[in-house]
Image (cartoon, rainbow, N blue to C red):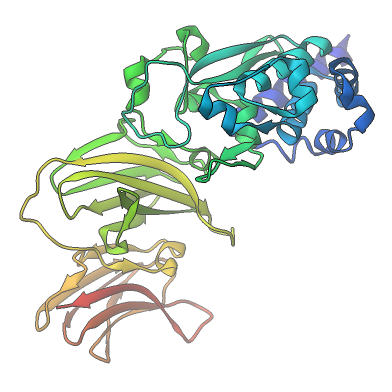
Length: 418
């Protein structure tokens, strides 16, 4: 009896860690995923045979649910032609298993059929999604997506095998890219891109309305994966006359960058400035004209050599234009990697012949200099803060820092001189 209680408690703790920890569970389920990857072709001919095989992947419902998710996302291909034409065809579980192609209904039906054979309770949830091409504030009269809810250890959890399998690219082709984010996604995260027709299936203590959902910040999996948090409003539409600033809470080892897009074209780097102050990251943006813009955020771990991943979108509506003009200085990767913080000057276009005050925090730096007109002006150090004046000449000004263990300076910022 005691051993049994310990096993149940351990299982519950394991499930809580997986769900509360962002659900990036690939490493936790390595043995199960490997088992699924070696599924014999002979057992894939019927739902009963496949279910019996997947049931042996684990001794508990959590592991078996993982096996179902992994097999479907690895083997079923989304059918964009059927989806966008509205001619779905037979989306039964048997047909989906046979053809290996489906829209969301087929994915859900196959998941339910396999779960039922294994003895796991699951249902299909119909609703609205913020998928390919979605813009914040967009409305639609019809529900456009389906996903599953599955009961594990007495509680309901979300599974989206369609989005967990991959995505549809700009050429309307399915690209398989498995994403564990959509396996047991926490309700408070799932609501950013999935809105169920029945409010109770939000699984939230305080369900939101459809209009609230449509105006939420467009949060992407990378936002959650990097443990970023919104500070303040979850409103995804910003109305401004010239500029805006978004502030996030971010772990020390996460880098954030941002871009502004308008009608599919990117506005210059100097229109956005990102910097850290402790555990807070501020993203400031300037807009050249009236109109609608997308402020897109990207993130990655500082030790990740790969590319930044799309993390979130804001829709910025510039309603009128003030007389305020300007650009930000260009910040180099080292500025972000070293957690530097610029206080002044924030104006990226400096006037030739002017005297400017430079003030910057550069943690760990042993020296910071302003390089102007070929001359080096060393800033005075007070702890992590470096400060001093420089006469602006030439066509470009750089701010560079030297860190312990190197005799070389690394450029942090660049200004243009007019």
